[in-house]
Length: 157
Image (cartoon, rainbow, N blue to C red; front, side, top):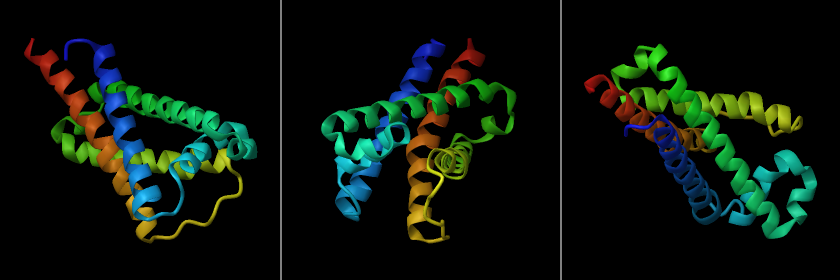
């Protein structure tokens, strides 16, 4: 990839799509904890609060938009910090997994508690590890691999 913008947009679309697909597949279809629409409405509820759950498909679309906006911010951030943190260059897989954990920490320990002051208590259990694994494989890993490809091409030129 020769373009910074194309690299960031590719990382964004791949990671955002993988994460959203994994979340819907795991939580709506496999575990049957929610529906796809409710999951998307819950993302929209970060802005629209309780009204998101009675807003139907429109709120689900807002949820998709907010999800991709958040994914874009994480793809952009990793791309920007990559040249300044040498340990990210050692292994794309390790740095991708670590970035997925970083994303989980930012979302679950900072963003969600600010957005939703009353959240269920977190426990070290299967659902917590599952949510981390989804972010490690679907957000961190693709962003790290796509970003590394761009920067390795730049050093070869």
